[in-house]
Image (tube, rainbow, N blue to C red; front, side, top):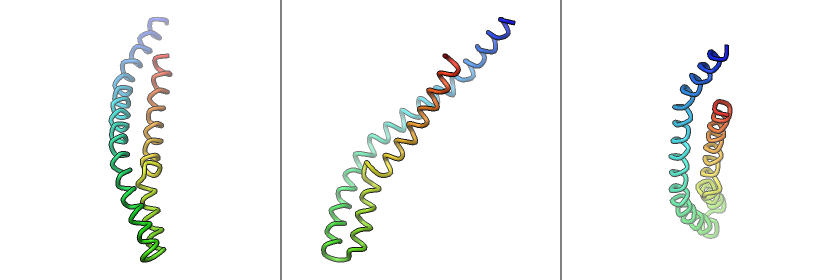
Length: 103
C-alpha cells in the first residue's frame, strides 16, 4: 500500500513539474514585459495628459477630459496595473500548485 502511494505521489510530482515550470516562465516573461511597457506607457501618458490639458483649456472641455481619461488608462496606474494584478494571480496559482504537490 505504501509503495503504491509513493508511486502515485511521484507520478503527480512528475506531471506537475512542467506545469509549474511553464507558469514560472510565463510570469517571468509577463513581469518583464510589464516593466518595459510601464516605462513606455508612462512616457506616452505624460504626452497625452499634457495634450489633454491643452485641449481642455483651449479647444473643448469634453475632448480634453476624454484625453485625460485615456492618459490615466495608459499610465502605469491604469491598464498596466490591472495586467500586473492578473499576472500575480497566475503566480499565486503556481505557488498553490507547488505547495499542494511538493509540500
